[in-house]
Length: 111
Image (cartoon, rainbow, N blue to C red; front, side, top):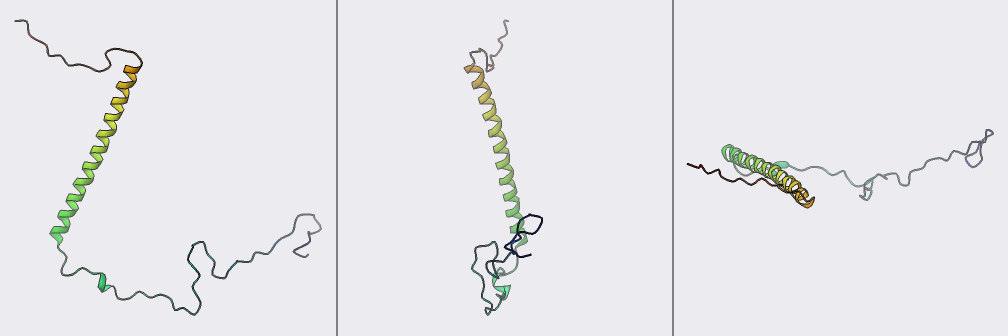
């Protein structure tokens, strides 16, 4: 059986798969030449901080970041709740009903 001719059962032909390039992959980087040495990682001491680590300052900054994140979450929940309530009130008013929003009137004592 040849790749160009169908077999006796009448199925189709099988084409061989050949990669476009020996180093082809799904990324967009140009293929590395074979004679290039593999990139090596140098000494990582250049990325270490200068001096000892200030644990107290780091924990303070972590606490501040946590408080800011909690504030942002609470502000988002409050804003979503407020928007939902305003939409509900607006739908009530636009439907023509009265008394959509409660009005607090202080009760005066008669005596």
